[in-house]
Image (tube, rainbow, N blue to C red; front, side, top):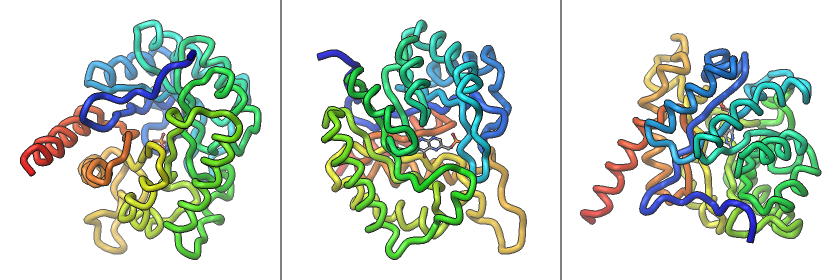
Length: 280
Ligand code: PMM
């Protein structure tokens, strides 16, 4: 069989370190926009213990405009190529089939599609041809207008149903069952209440039977934790403690992986979870 197996370190969650090669991501926009800075950042995340580096060239913050295809390729390819050449396990965070194919061509081994294959129907064909792992996130449309689609009857049931239907379609298309990861898409067409409800019921998402990834790191809903009503939200970099708490909750719920900015802090938190588990 070709293609990289799903990374699975013994005894703990997979930690994906975020490398956003974008001028405008909410969490770290502009910090790593030049390829050299993004490569150095990826190397720092790997040195801190990241199992996977997740390289993306399109900001998905609410309201963000999409880059052109050429611009997205220009952003991500040198970074993917350099980190893969170092021996890193690289995932490409893209909704475009041609970006996924080009990134796989220069060494990426995982495709992370926040649209779960819905934005570009050809992306699934790229994944199937490569037999590579795919992360399929719950998604209700592109960033412009995304928060107007944050309406659910029962958010946990609705997201589970949508992910189950994505799972069935992707498996029918030929994505390998042991290489398909699902993701509830915290912050994507979801308000804070929706995100908290999903975190409270990760067991229902784990029960879908596929490995589950959670990406809570630094997201807007964490900016209000511990902040009085009316006071300004915490900026993204001041959301790390709250992020770590979500990582512990997700690890205890049995998720496969965590997509985070602070790799070292996440690994410490996972070590604590393991030590407590070992003493049960
Ligand atoms: N969130 C962002 C980008 N890509 N991919 C997956 N699978 N899950 C996520 O939750 C996710 C993602 C946006 O966050 P960022 O600006 O920190 O990259």
